[in-house]
Amino acid sequence: MQGILPTTVVGSYPQPEWLVDRQMLGSRLPPRTRALEIWRVAPEFLEQAQDDATVVAIRDMERAGIDIITDGEIRRESYSNRFATALDGMDLDNPGTALDRTGHPNPVPRVVGPIHRTRPVEMRDVQFLRANTDRPIKATLPGPFTMSQQAQDDYYKDEEALAMALAAAVNEEVRDLFVAGADIVQLDEPYLQARAEKAERFAIKAINRALEGITGTTALHTCFGYAHIVHDRPKGYPFLEPLADTTAQQISIESAQQNVDLGNRINNALRFVDRERLILAPDCGMKYLSRDRAFGKLRALAQAAEKVRAEL
Image (cartoon, rainbow, N blue to C red; front, side):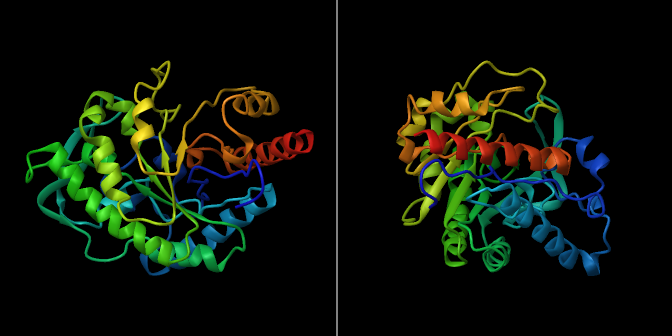
């Protein structure tokens, strides 16, 4: 880990226009089933193209001065669908429907049998990232509670049972990502905020099952919603105190706003969190920004962190 006040990203970074149809990506709800139509590159060249774009994202984060980097989630159509759709027990050819955070219906995987992870899903991604940077690296996975809210359950007929089955699959993947070289593995759980009443019932239990027996550094990200999609912005987190009961070592919360003085924001946070325990990051959903804007945000964050460190 880098000294005090290390900087990181939540997960994603903009995918280049030559790789994905960015207009199509930004004009729809985040896909829960596969969305192969967004890729511009022919299938036989897609993996090579994704690798090349991932290197671009890695170098941008390094140039910006970010301490703990990700692969930008360049190979994903959304933060969650790549892992969720790789699990046995999901019928992808006959998807179901679930309400998204906007309240609109969105096609989702349909659960038709026991959930099992039959193979590592993101292990190669982490190995590739590890081979292409000397900086600490973070891998990201969708959390079990959120995935349970992004599926149509025609098998368990019980959301908690589904979440616990998903948690077991996530646990297997987390173990493999540490073997692949991850320094931190982060679970993304945006539906803690979006489905707080259900989260009260079984989210912490599912998250702790996903992290059971894990000895590496783990993080839990709680999203506040993509601004370009969730227009009715909530006033605060309805599900924050229960996170003290998770076994994750890091909790990621968002407080982004326009025209903020980053130095003041960092110093305000230091009133409540010891400097040895504070990690700095931008908002999530950077994949929907232009590359210039995303890089500018990361550079501004790194510069602000450097300035505050010098003043401490």
